Length: 414
Image 1 (cartoon, rainbow, N blue to C red):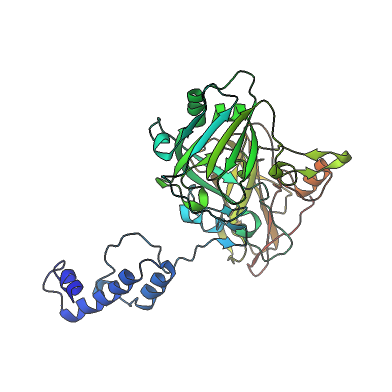
Image 2: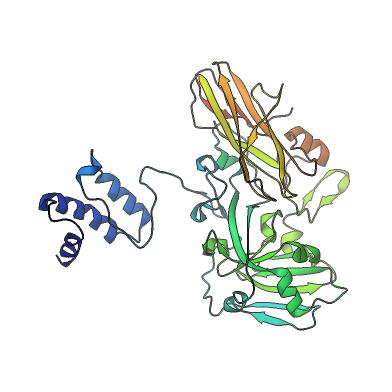
């Protein structure tokens, strides 16, 4: 009753008690269940009315929620969950929809106890806590992160999220790793460093020292808030443009050395056989890639003008151009790129197309500023001498059926 009196005082007295009670009841549902997002959405949806101008809405709360009519969710498995690429409108991925990839689950870490040790071939080994990192000059940059195993195929009923949803983009904020390198004094003969995480897998990767000097960040914030536990809270290593597993989360140790360490994650994992009995190892850069996100499965289109939309990116720099084909790859047309076009960042593209009802396939391909053009699956297999593995970035096709249904093209050997 005290809560009802408090609410009443916030509105003009001319509102009827019956109307106020109806609105307060709806608000109470949201307030009582504010810690359970899914329950909130169900409660609000069930209490929606024909004319929202005739009833007081939910009052301000501690944390915002999405509309109950928006169904964007990640698609989880035991070790990962994929971003719903087909639902995004801009270049930034909402933090709670950023893809996840874990090797032993998400650890619960107390930021006051967590430490980062930098040692090895340094003049002055040091330990940094979160508060220490925040005392240094901060930097922010918008860049994507992508798992090197980000490709799935095999059936027509697949969404962009299922095909390559292990990529997301954020504004990352933290301290330059080069700043910390200067603090500890890197010795002249050092060429590599080991990054070690504080999760149960103790994830470790060998990184060329030059990448640390170039653009590496120890990130403690994401999209304007503290980095989330799934993304490495209280801080993580972030290496723009490189395969996601090198951006070690829950970072606790950096060991400076004059050689790579050949850890478990870069020998038994994240390496692959190719032709002539050779193996790919330390294939850090994410190759240029694009995917059409609309139209895509399970959407259905109608005859007329359609704005084809999608995402393109490259780990080696900026996207230079994106081409779209609406006739199964027979001809290609330049798509328009939405500004800003940033280094090592997702870029949205669009192309206006008039569909007349014929059955066809639509595709996209990207060229980055190095001149590299996204290949077909056949070209990838021929170049590597193997069918599978990591860093698979093939041109992706969507089938448009005569009835307007859109299906994924599982394999394309053009």
